[in-house]
Length: 521
Image 1 (cartoon, rainbow, N blue to C red):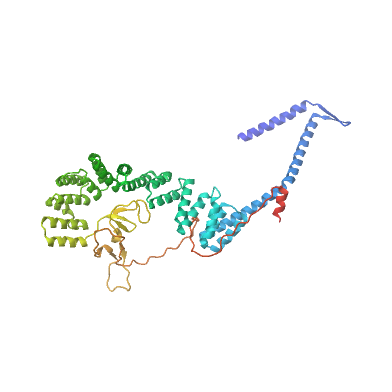
Image 2 (tube, rainbow, N blue to C red):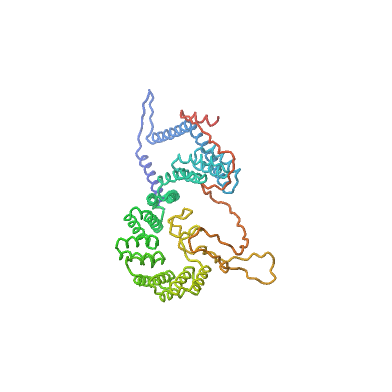
């Protein structure tokens, strides 16, 4: 509505102007080179307007003629770029579909049409990886690192290729360069952190963790830093006791439920005579995570105490989390040391119907210490051999007798306090070789089979023995990959030809006509 009003107002003003000029006629005389032209003001104005329009048309035509070589060159460049874009699109789709021939063909075409294009380099690297041409893939990734937009992608590809050829030094160098270029890059920071942890360089690991702080949420960062500080405290305990105690206290502040840090801090504070602070830390850790290491440190928080004083302390600690096996074991152990056999038996009484290995072993010690009854001792030791296992420090299928900051597979904070092979209670369907004559249960529980005797000491990974082979499951059909997960390697190691070398185009800067002539060579 406003535009209509403005249009009408404009038309009215123009009409008013023409009327005003028509009401005030005048003459215009032009004398030039012996000629004299006389006309009215209105006609002279219209003639000037016509001359301006003609001049603009002539200038537009001349400018179009002068710029035609550049416009034609731009048209052909645009068409070439579109062909390159379509070739890259076909190649990436072919990689997702697993069509190696089309992917290589499209990579060749893209390299010819769009040399230096980031997506062309990605397609070249992906097709080379798919064909097993590691050298071609590395050349493409090196080319990516020369351009700022694709530098991080190229470094990521070089890192993966270095890992595949087991070149740890190259992988570490590439990861450090990527982490320096982008501190918030998760994979680079994690790679540097894993490398420092593998080398037990806890100072370097803490520095690497600080660099990747922006890529982690607050809880994860605090946990990882607490684990690294606990590892540093354990490494410094025989070198610098004050620094070790400070690292452990900071770890406890970040993660109060981290058992190794709390136990270590409690012992170091007790050694320095600060029993009150040690008790406070150990009590807080026990409430969050009852653990035998916490109980052991709390029992010896005051040096020189009698066995009965330690028993009283253990009873107060166990009362904070009632009905917990670790508390009962701690009380029973302290009572046995104080020769309070009744209290020791009473603490273990709720667990004697189905004792664990530690409960049965402790009962054997009670029988031997109190009565010296060899028969009862052998009975409890036999029950210990057949009893269910107790929690231990476990990571990646490996059992350790103490906590370690890094698992055998290189995972930080990988060791967990749990029962090894806890999945033994999973049920599997029975595989029948022939139809049964009588109905049989459809599943059996592996936990029902009698476990083999296992020594209480720490041992390497214990393979799970399957009592029944699980039924064959349908193999899932692999879906079409909608996106390319660069720079992954989905192909086997095949010695195919390397990547095509992109053609180089030389464009002269002498002028648009020269560029136009080069297009038709």
